[in-house]
Length: 157
Image (tube, rainbow, N blue to C red; front, side, top):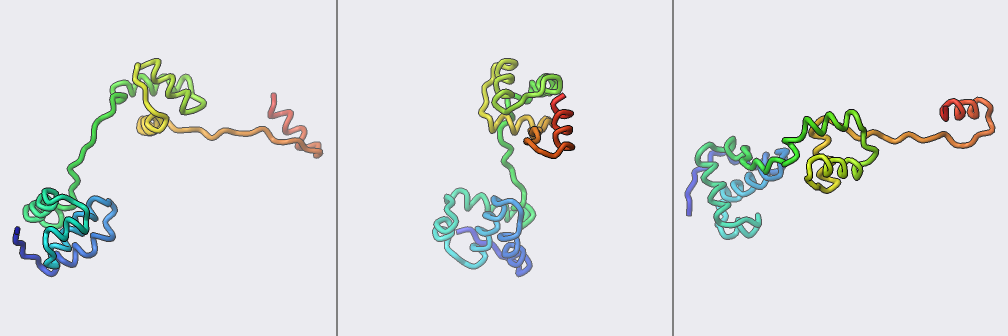
C-alpha cells in the first residue's frame, strides 16, 4: 500500500474540489485522493469510484509528484479530426455556398473531401471553424388587417 502524509490543508482542498471543480474527471481524481486521505483501503476506493487499481496508483503518483495542482491537469488530448486539413477550403466553400441544413453540409463535405461524417460531427466541425447555423425565418400568416397584408406582399417580393 502506498503511504501518503496528507496535510489538513490538502484534505480540505480535496474535499472542496471533489464537488466544485468544473471538470468531472478532476472531480473523480479528487474523490479518490480524498477517500485515500480518510484511510479507506485501495480495494474499497476502486470499488466505490469504479476505477482499476492501476488508475488508482496513477492518481496517487500524480498527487505525490505535484499535490492537488497536479491532479487538476488533464493529459487526454483526443484525436485530431481528418477534416482539419480541409478547414480553409471548406470554410471558403460554405461562405460562398451556404448550406440550408446539416445534412446538406455533410453531403458537400463528403463530395469535396471524400470523408463521410455524421451530422453531429459535421455540426461540431462547422462550429469549430467559425461557421454557424442560421435560424430559418417564416412567412407571416394570413391577416385581415390591411397593414399586415401589405407587409406580407412586401415580404414576398
